[in-house]
Image (cartoon, rainbow, N blue to C red; front, side, top):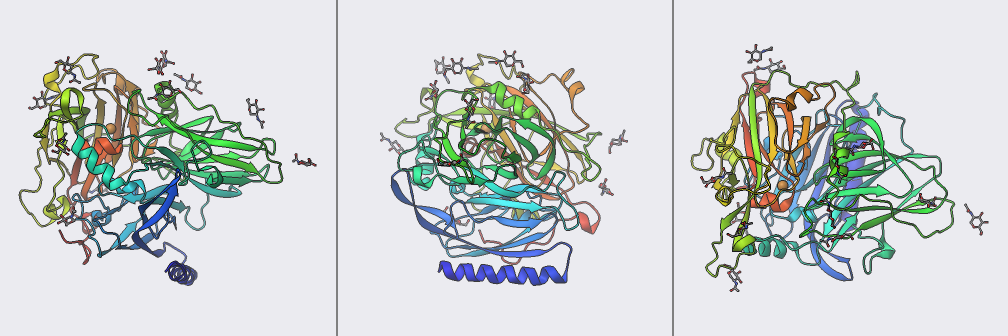
Length: 567
Ligand SMILES: *[C@@H]1O[C@H](CO)[C@@H](O)[C@H](O)[C@H]1NC(C)=O
Ligand SMILES: *[C@@H]1O[C@H](CO)[C@@H](O)[C@H](O)[C@H]1NC(C)=O
Ligand SMILES: *[C@@H]1O[C@H](CO)[C@@H](O)[C@H](O)[C@H]1NC(C)=O
Ligand SMILES: *[C@@H]1O[C@H](CO)[C@@H](O)[C@H](O)[C@H]1NC(C)=O
Ligand SMILES: *[C@@H]1O[C@H](CO)[C@@H](O)[C@H](O)[C@H]1NC(C)=O
Ligand SMILES: *[C@@H]1O[C@H](CO)[C@@H](O)[C@H](O)[C@H]1NC(C)=O
Ligand SMILES: *[C@@H]1O[C@H](CO)[C@@H](O)[C@H](O)[C@H]1NC(C)=O
Ligand SMILES: *[C@@H]1O[C@H](CO)[C@@H](O)[C@H](O)[C@H]1NC(C)=O
Ligand SMILES: *[C@@H]1O[C@H](CO)[C@@H](O)[C@H](O)[C@H]1NC(C)=O
Ligand SMILES: *[C@@H]1O[C@H](CO)[C@@H](O)[C@H](O)[C@H]1NC(C)=O
Ligand SMILES: *[C@@H]1O[C@H](CO)[C@@H](O)[C@H](O)[C@H]1NC(C)=O
Ligand SMILES: *[C@@H]1O[C@H](CO)[C@@H](O)[C@H](O)[C@H]1NC(C)=O
Ligand SMILES: [Cu+2]
């Protein structure tokens, strides 16, 4: 079976080479993803996990900027699945975006769906992952986007490159974990390990022989493509005795800066240059949680080994990672990001805002609805989350895109509020309990084609403040400002960076703080926006935009592919 897949892949590569020689511009590349269960042993025990092509992490997709990748997704598992291409803007093509019940119904067991991944301006590192229930824990992989032929990196060509995928592992089956989480009404069970390229590393039982090893030659410079695929946690990452230079994030180049550590949200990527300039020893690279709250966190540390060639073994020592609750370290790192913004990579920061939005991000509670009143939220409540006090309810028998495209009623409403209905002191230490219970609904915000949108995200201290890595599908956005406490509309906009703000698809709104983003709504379709901490997503910290068609034919949604999964 594996041999067959490899042969098919080789054939694909040969075909690509031939096509590549005939045509030197954007390529169409074709891949097969077989979603299937496979046994994996970690932390001294073996369990079946959902994988793509039997691999964990899954296969890496390579392309050049502007190519199109076609992926034939075969669901050979026993459950519904969908796949999202995280950070790929998919111009006019929401059909292949992936989130189940938002832009498609899931690919059912035994079914196949051919997804077109239309690349445009993205360059650097992105990733793909399942977007159904909590399957992305094991169903994910890297997308590597090289410069177009005839152009090059805006930095010296690295000697070699490595993907470093940070992940999170439970001994328990993920589907079971998810069901238990929903039933409990409380926080999810914390993970048993973090992982680097699927391996927990030396500090966990039964893991040492399999630690990921990155072998380098002294004097050479390497490109590390760091991806955080963890489910519930922002992570700090660092390499002992080495600093790195950040040169890209979320598929876009940044002004280079040196740093001893990275703070990376689930959903984000960083391109890092590492120069191997230390004695020929072994060094740990390590990652562990950043969390403002001390409770319900996996406090363990995952490691991999940076190993110099031609050296002798030396026991590696750990890097200095910021303390788990060091919000300053997290915020400080994020605030250093700047777009490269050179002649070849020009910015188009919207300056004239036509659609001004203010979205509160809250953790909430509902009364327990279990008959036996067994909910594990505070005061026997059921935990929830919301944007502008609406806890998002996912459709279950249809999806928003299909309902919108075919004018089906009753699937979603169009009354998502532009601003909170009840303003309050969002970040106060004590907040009245009546504010804590949100509404439920499936409301979208309609955007005119080409409107220029600004969103101020305001974290609140309802139930408990937390950082929220907000992710928008269908766009990259400029992060023009951020701060702690309540947003001050008189003062804070004066400090916006409209010159070289970073271009991200995921940004952590700091705990009890705010972040402002801008984008131009020039991609017609239905686009999900949600917190990328999986528990917050499941609790309802989500909403969707519908960007209307423009007038020109090139400003309209493409027709749906013939094999959209049926509902
Ligand atoms: C790494 O840095 C630590 C602290 O600065 C130092 O004590 C140690 O000798 C260094 N290790 C190597 C192998 O250079
Ligand atoms: C996490 O580790 C730190 C330092 O070891 C400790 O102070 C803290 O209490 C731990 N937190 C949890 C939730 O275990
Ligand atoms: C490794 O050890 C050998 C034997 O002790 C020694 O000759 C050699 O110089 C060492 N290499 C390095 C790079 O330290
Ligand atoms: C971080 O947690 C420690 C306890 O582990 C606590 O003493 C300290 O005040 C916390 N720092 C912040 C900034 O919350
Ligand atoms: C965090 O940074 C702020 C200034 O930005 C400073 O006032 C505060 O003391 C710092 N807190 C810690 C725990 O370092
Ligand atoms: C943020 O980091 C930079 C560089 O490491 C440092 O100079 C600055 O003082 C830090 N700022 C805060 C508020 O900690
Ligand atoms: C801003 O946009 C509005 C609506 O499109 C337009 O009427 C106005 O002229 C624009 N202002 C500037 C300064 O471009
Ligand atoms: C309470 O009800 C939930 C589902 O409604 C169930 O999963 C749980 O096992 C029940 N707990 C007890 C103690 O009966
Ligand atoms: C739980 O209930 C008590 C008493 O009514 C209240 O003081 C407390 O704030 C509540 N906590 C939460 C998180 O709702
Ligand atoms: C959210 O809406 C509910 C229902 O209308 C209300 O009781 C609650 O106070 C609202 N909370 C906030 C923060 O606006
Ligand atoms: C949308 O904006 C683009 C770029 O500014 C412009 O070329 C196009 O004419 C606009 N389309 C519409 C329908 O406003
Ligand atoms: C799988 O997806 C189909 C189509 O949307 C749906 O009818 C079915 O209920 C789903 N099954 C499960 C177990 O969620
Ligand atoms: Cu969140």
